[in-house]
Image (cartoon, rainbow, N blue to C red; front, side, top):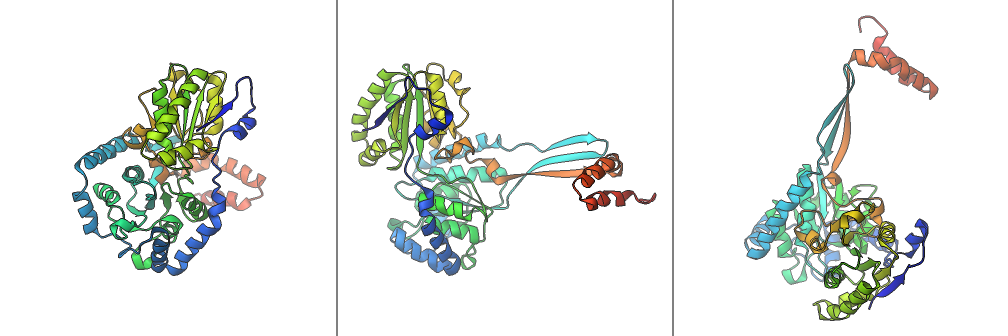
Length: 438
């Protein structure tokens, strides 16, 4: 059901640990040629290319690529009451937590009349991708839209694949979530072609190019984001989901098992990893996985994910070694279920989101923790972060110097400009003082 990696008695180097971590064989680069062709088709064929791709990949031709406001309003009106309540709660909680991600403007005074202002300015327009494959993700609408709104983005376009069972429109629950958030620009399009459409625009649809594209998708979506990355900003090349759990003998094996299965049900390529210093816990979890994986609704998908090379139970000598392994892995989701989680988290440097204690499962973060669930995968948390308001903000410095403040530093500017053989730089300062009346 799941492989075991036994590192007890070994002290791998940091580089060796990176090679030891279990990884999916998914390689975004293998999808680049196909993604490039789909993007090129959209650039050349516009609206017709999107329709052709919808028929090819989604099995349906949308009657209208842009979803009407009346359809969005109808979707809101017909949302299941319990789902609507949950979405409204998620929106408010994510909005509250995201506000903390917007830094205040700051002014640094370097001397009389010498000021540098730091501001965080939002991009004007963004494109948000909401997948529509094995599951429906209204929660991803919340996680993408709310940070953009909190950041102050004025124009938001949302795309999601056409659904055959809904006449080629976007899934009504996705539309309902978008409507609750006040999104009025929604398109029934998916895959690499949708990423190309957001980056380059489709004039006949009134779809203008965006400055930032965010949201998870399949390997072709990830490849498309890599391709358009030179033209528009992206959040990350999000791949199959991951969970890594650090647990000791105090952990409840049924909790650990349930959390591993919860992520495995996303996708056959999902990664579920337990790192523990307790052989007893490892045996208990392995035994429970046999039953739980068979009894869950998506049993076949879960079994494939748990049996894959990307999933494992890792045995280590102690929790310090567990933390080192986790840092080398750089998980999307990290759970710490130990007797003292705070003692471990201080040693954690690389993780998309960290869930402390037995009652902070990843499922909480997927929906209602208030944190964002769009997170880096494939080890990218070692150098990047999850989606947040900062994704849509650009730090800008505003420089204000008066005549006296510039005069105070002009000789030092001259010295540096001459040292770099850029005399015109020095002259651009000197000209401001070359006559007494200036």
